[in-house]
Structures are given as structure tokens and as C-alpha cells.
Image 1: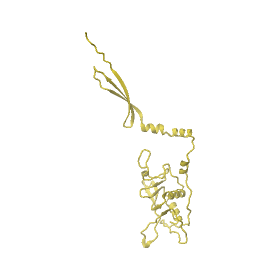
Image 2: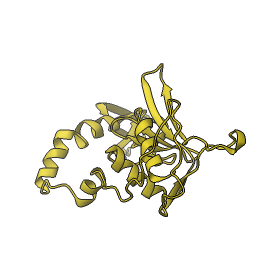
Image 3: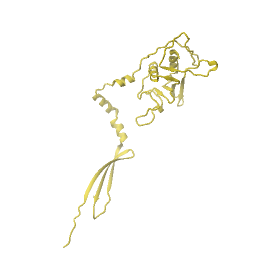
Image 4: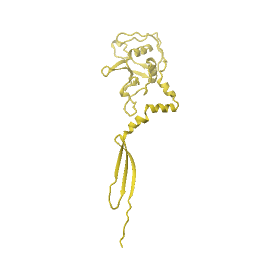
Length: 231
């Protein structure tokens, strides 16, 4: 009498989800434990059309979708956003009317003019012959073949946030979409936002070393403001 062995094959399908490069794929692995025929597992990969970053940009952060969500949540902007985007009011008025020469130099106020105590201060340039009064440290910066013009303010000491608030009030500037840029500012996907410079959407930046950069050629306005404060 002969004995017959009945061999049953157990098939198992295991889904596996992973990433290849920047694209998503859905893998189905089929493995068979066959005692008679020694087969190897087979993997079938199905690649999606869009990567995870593209899906997030096109669908999750789509402007139309965000507007719909905003309307569903009430639609009114928060108090923090509205207050940060508005222009502040000046706290320290001018104490005298300065006079400028053709080279941009202005004389400090006379001794009879009382200069108030400011939480910030500006130091004029030094090293002039006969200890003469220097210039206000406000400079024009031209880059990108003359198409990029900015204004630099150096030697700012003391309460920098108060100084920036007064500067925004004088020049009628907002904080920008990303706020006041600094050397530690990073973008949504990494990288230094401050290293990209100022523009119309982000008009103010604190550069490495403490210099304050303003978008556009605003040197005359800033010099008149600082000299009117008594610096």
C-alpha cells in the first residue's frame, strides 16, 4: 500500500508602502511556501503620478482649498496677524529740523536743544580730522547689476525692536509676510530666508553683524528722521 502526501500551498499577500526617490509606490509581495517547487517571492510596484511633495503642494496647501477652509472656520483674520501687518504709530517726534549738505552730512542739534533719552541710539562715523562730527551710518547698497537697491543702517544699539517699530512708522512699512528677517530665519522647506535679501513682501532684514537692511533707496528719509531725533 502506497502513501500519498497531500501538499497544500499557502499563499500570502502582504502590502508594503514605501518611497522610491521622491515618488510614492505601493508594493504587493506574494510569497508561496511550496515544498515541491522552490519559488522566490515576487514584488509588483505601482508608481503614483505625483510625489508626496507635489501632492502636498497641489492639494493640501492649494490656495483655493485654504480659502474654503478659512471661510468654514469663520473667515475673520486673527488679531495677531492683523496687528503684525499694520503700520505702527510714531512714539518719538522730531526735536529740530536738520540741514543737509550735498554730500549727505548734517550738523547735530545745537547745545540749547534738549535731546530726550531714547531706548536706542545711533553712533556717527568717527576718525574725522580735528575730531569733526561724522556722518550718520546710513548707506545705499546697489546689487544685481543695478536692479537691486537697498538701504543699510549700521551702528544701531539699544532696544532694536523699538527702533524697528519707529523705522516702520516713518517709512510706512509692514513687517512682511515672514516678519522681520534675521540670520536665523528659515524657509518652509529649510534654507535661510534672510540670505535671499529683502523685497517688497519682506522689506526689513537684520543682517549678520547687526546692520539693518531696508528694501529700496530710503537713505534720505532715514537720515532726515535720525538727524531730526538729534543723532
